[in-house]
Image 1 (tube, rainbow, N blue to C red):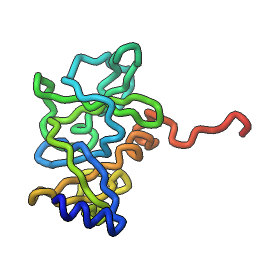
Image 2: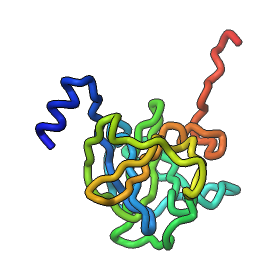
Image 3: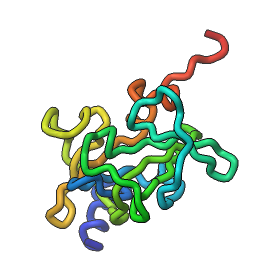
Image 4: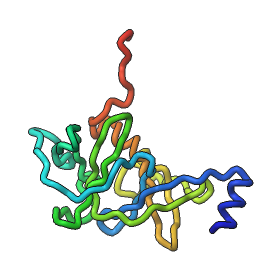
Length: 167
């Protein structure tokens, strides 16, 4: 791939790195620049009246972090919590959010040309939360637009369009 990568940079191709992870039987990935750290699942403090996919909050070195189980949110895989369950800590709009996944796979590098547009149907969640799809080593990877998802009104974790004081 070294030759192809060099050719892409000459032709203006843009390389981006993604962290790939598993939910159920599917492979997903998100922009690695949003990843703060990867940890094992720990017990969380439940929040009353929160949707099922919001497991609760945890204290991460003084920061109170909401934890979202993407397996429940996307309705994929068995939801079990054991020593293999992973929480990816993300930094989105200066707010830390944890997402629960079945496992972390690898860091993958993709050019813009390798990312296919998202389909309008047939995936477990709304395509506005997708960057697209990529075929990596004959495995289809779903590229999640994690910022869009985390800032969505549906999750309600972060204001997507904060109102300025003058308005």
